Image (cartoon, rainbow, N blue to C red):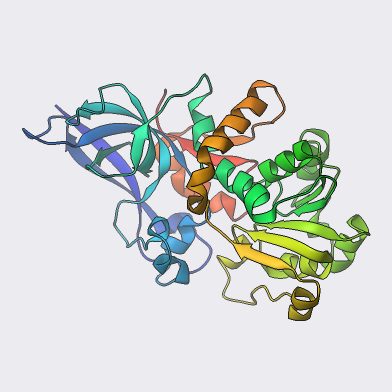
Length: 347
């Protein structure tokens, strides 16, 4: 038996804003019969994560490509790997059985062959939708949890500012911080998103950064007593403005700089005198740095979910592999609300 596997590749390196023409849908035939003695798995992909950092992998050159295996360069025509949930359809590995659910590094395709040693494990849904394990219970959730609690180490009553606050990470940072007892303000790019931050997610306040001409003055208005913690997903002018408004011993957790991924222009440049004399800590980090916190993160987050204390924001494209390019492109246009992913097949 054979299946046709459709998958997405890039036609050439992407050094600016991604466009539909940068991508190509290819197909291959995969045999559903493994060779004798093979330990491979053949899995059917169900949900795949769509993340901004993937664009840096598609560039002809990026410093990030040398720093982590997760950020390794992607060459034109190559299969693109990503985090997601799948189901085993053929197993040569005694540790995995047919029809078991797995989670880990899969591909931007409908099927994939998993070799021994790959980053994949069995998935216990724990009563939650499979999509939750790609987002809030996956690396997006761990990024928010570890960045807030380990990197920034909040104290009750501290003032927290979150940029791209309705993104996959930002919305969770704000919710975790509110549950912990902090004062939280977020920013987003539309009036509707600002309303959602305040009325649905419970942020103390929020603003539309596109309507503001002076970000430093804006943040001074929302934080007249200064910012203690800034969770940075943006970089650029927003980071400069936040640092200018920070209190002494403020902490900045940087998990992304999406404003700089598509532009070769001006980069973030906070006032270093502020950094020194306010004794501000700025720390970049990756979720993979904090796998030691994973069990604690999942336990606490599941408790919050079961108690109805966390809102899950998922933006799921349900039209399969064909929608992967537009889903990635949409991230850089601010189209998503919450965690962006593509459903590749029915559960």
